[in-house]
Every structure is written in C-alpha cells, then in structure tokens.
Amino acid sequence: MPHDLTKVGSAQTPAASAQPGGPGSGQPAGAGPGHPAGAGPVDDSAAALAGLDALDTPTVQRAPRWRRAVAVGVPPLVALALFLAVWQGLWAAAFWPEFKLPAPVSVWHEFTVVVANGEVWSILWTSISRAFLGFLIALVIATPLGLLVAKVAVVRAAVGPLLSGLQSLPSVAWVPAAVLWFGLTNSTIYFVVLLGSIPSIANGLVAGIDQIPPILPRVGQVLGARGLTSARHILLPAALPGYLAGCKQGWAFSWRSLMAAEIIAAGPLLGIGLGAYLEQGSSFNNISMVIAAIFLILIVGIGVELLVFRPVERRVLRARGLSGTH
Amino acid sequence: MTVTIGQPTERRTPAGPGPAAVRLAGVSKTFGTGAAAVTALRDVSLDVRPGEFVCLLGASGCGKSTLLNLVAGLDRPTGGELTLNTTRPSFMFQEPALLPWLDAGRNVELPLRLNGVARGARRDRARELLELVRLDGQARKRPHELSGGMRQRVALARALAATTQPGDPDATGLLLMDEPFAALDAITRDVLQGELLRVWQATGTTVLFVTHDVREALRLAQRVVLLSSRPGTVAGEWDVEHSTTDLYDEITASLREVITRHAA
Image 1: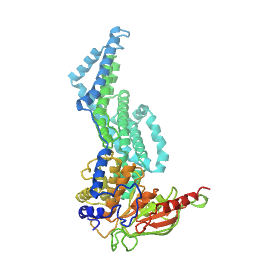
Image 2: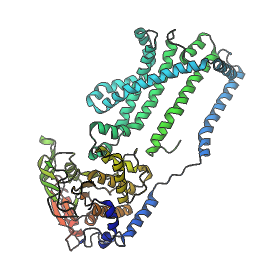
Image 3: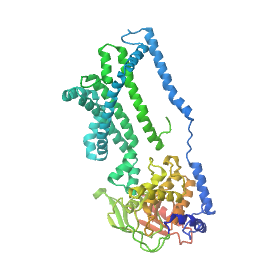
Image 4: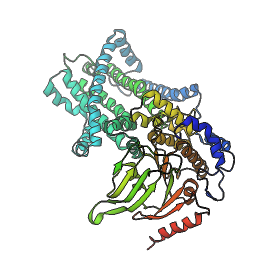
C-alpha cells in the first residue's frame, strides 16, 4: 500500500538501504561522481537532514521584555517632557499675550474642570461612538467596493480614478453641501464621515490585492480553490496587510472628518462632541479650552491607534514574518 | 481531453505496467492567432506510466511550463489529446509558495480543506504527511520560521495532500514539479533530491519533474525526456533505469545540440 504511510515509514529503511542512489535500482553511476547521499546507510540521510534543518532554521533573538518596554516607552515620554518645557519657557518669556498662548497649567486646569464635572465622558462618548459607527458602516460599504474595483476591470476603469480622487478631496468640503441636504442632523455628520473614510479603506484593499504575489492565487487554483472560496482562503488573507493599512487610514480620515463636521455643523440636535466643545472654546475666546480640546482630540486619535490598530497590525505582520520590530 | 479521476490501475509500485497515468498524443499549444501566434509546444507525444518518475529536460523556451500547465488542467491544448488517469494533479514550483499567514500544518491541510475533508481527518493526514517529509513537530511553525529546504518540504507535503487520497488506495497521485530545487543551495538540493526519491517510493506517486540540470535528471528519473526549444518538441528519450552506461555525456551532448540550433 504505497499510500499507507505508517507502514511505509517502518518499511522504508530496508528498502532504501537496499537501493542506494534511489529507486531506479539499475541506476548506474547515475548521479555521477561526487554524489554523497545514498552512499551511507539511510539513517545517515535522516540525520543529515536533521542537521541541515538545525543549521538553516532562522534564529530569532529577542531583547528582554523590560528592555523593549524602555525602548518603546521612554523616547515619547522624553519628547513630551521637552515639549512641555519649551511651552512653559515660551509662556514665561511672554512673547505673546495670555489669550494667545496659555500656560500649560491653565490648560491642565481647563481639562480637570471638564473631567471633574463629568462632562468629558459625554463629550468623548458622543464623538467616539459617532466615529466608530461611521467607521463600521464605511467598512461594510468599502470592503465589497474594494473587492469589485480590484477584481473587475470595468469597475476599476470606471470608479478607480474617482476613488483615488475622493481620497485627496478634503471631506470638510462636503460639510456645507451635507448641511443643505440633511440639515443639522446626525445624517450630516455620518455623510461626511463616510465620504472621508470609504475611499481610504477601499483603496487600501485594492492596493493590498494588487500587491499579492501572483504565485499565491496560482497555488490556490492548483489546490482547487475557485471563485468565492479562492477569495476567502487566498485573496482576502493575502491582502490583509494592505487592507489593514487602509483601515487605519480610513479610521484617521473618519476621525478628522468627524471633527471638521462637528466644528462646522453645530446645532441642538447634534449634542456636544469634541468638535462642538472646541468650537465653544473658540466662541468664548477661551484659548485654554481650545487647546484642551485639541489635546483631547489628539489623545483619542493616538489611543485608538495604540489600543486598536497597532496590536492587530503587529499580530498580522508578525505572523507573516514581516515585522519583528516594535 | 478526457480526465478520469480515480480509475483503478493494476499496480502502483514505481514504474508498474498498466494504462498510462498521463498520455499526451500529439499535443500542441499555440498562444495567440495569426502573425502574432507563438507555438509553445508542437506534436508532443509522451506516455507516463503510473508511479513512474519522468524528468523533462530542456533549456529555456522548451515549453516545459506550458506542458505542466496543460497537464495540471490550468490551460487547454490547441491540438492533440491529453489523457489523465490519476487523481487531481498537484504542482510544486521553484519557490515553496506557502501561504505566509498559515502555519506549516495548515498549509498542508489547505487542499484537503478546499476539498471538504473534515477537520479531524485533515489534521491527521497533515501530521502523517509532515512526518513523511521528516518535519514532525514543526506543524505549528510559520513559513518564515523555517529554512528554505524545510519550506520546500512543506510544499511537497502539501502537494502530496492535494494529490493522494489515503481512503482510496487505487487512485494514483500525480506530482508536477517545475524545477522545485533550483532555488536551493547545493547541499540542501542534494539532500532534498534524496528525500524526494524516498517520498516517491513511499507514496507510489507518478512524478513529472522539469529541470535544467542533467545530473539532477539522471539521479532522480527512471526516464529522461529531452525537449527542444521554440517550439517544444520531444528531442530525445533515455531509459535511465535500465541503462548500463553513464548517460551524462550523451544527454549533455544532445542538449547542446538542441541549444546550438538556436545560435543563428
């Protein structure tokens, strides 16, 4: 039973040693001079293979955890401290009046006020929930769109340039139109967020699919993957790094579009998000509040990047041996 | 073109008699039409017995990739007839072409998964095949954690998973190999050639192996078929198994002759 592997495994030793140089038993000088394998007993070839594997296997050296934590954590903290020091110095030098450049302490104070009265949570929730909901809707629309553009030539020719163009169009340009169409409602906000993030996600997926090495779809075909099966088992996983990069950019676009929409479109139906909070500060001529709002927007952006996208991306890239660092 | 899957054959020991596993009868392949037409293969006739190991030897442009694609069913001949008497043929390329997001075990499982084999069964089968290529215990490793030779052995296990059917001992598998060791260093290549012979013996699979290397062809094959270039035709055939002389010089001379024809 040649297919019976267990049997074969035990039978293979005598068989192979009886026929050095392979199954072509009549094989003459066959491999010619300088033909090492098969000269010794078969156990030798197993050992040689094991030795070769041990020698050739890539070794990975990883620094201890604490050292990596220091390497990752210390530089940004130092940069932040330097930034605060320069700010404090500039403020102390009094080049600009107080209403233009506030003291770091007064921004901090403004920040503690919103935190103390609990307003900060409702502000953050309003904005983050909108951005996430918008981002999720964008994902649902952009993923099939990206697949279509990448795989159907006619669609790519028709929509591809438009999609790239939309990516460079600042989504804030849509706000006035959206206000006229939808009024000061949540629809306006979501419309702007979607137009900001869909092109990025779709383009990311297209780029991810375009960068798949051609051998992989071929392997899928040889192994019996067709159509949707091929998309599920080969195409989408292979395009995942590019798709993730697109999602990350799509999130960034959705967040900044949201801020633009919230700053411009303020109304009683809309509730107070981070953008409206910033706009309030500006209306009250309260520079500390404006700066505090900007920091909050920045912190949310960095937080989502660090807590959501970075770990996912790291896992995906590391599993493929694409990025051992950071 | 008739493809009969799983038709019983009388014997599957290497090079056993019986109906041909692969039969090419006057197969031609032309790409394009009119003045721009390129003939890649012209009137190629070749019988491969079940369990036989045949090396196709040829310089660039001999249409060997075209030939393998035809046998694999990725392309159709424009003339002649191609008959397969094996299970689904599987392919090995110069690069291992493992899916980088799957570990070694899951790469081997993939063809079984695509063919709807249940999880437990395909896991067992993958373990068996990894053992066969002497990669026991490496199933959880990702491709980038393996050496080039180990990756190529995972690819071999995956190709075997695609073409062999443990439940049906009457079905002979067909391995199409397109210079699978060409990108490896000399030491690894030498060891893997020995491994391929051992695995071929163990599984009784029919092998169609393309190479540029006369020594490799002589070491591996029972029969060497020399293809000429542009268009590809059969330019010579040597029975290595039953030959009593060293065919190296003879085959090399023929290969040179075929190449020299293109000097003008």
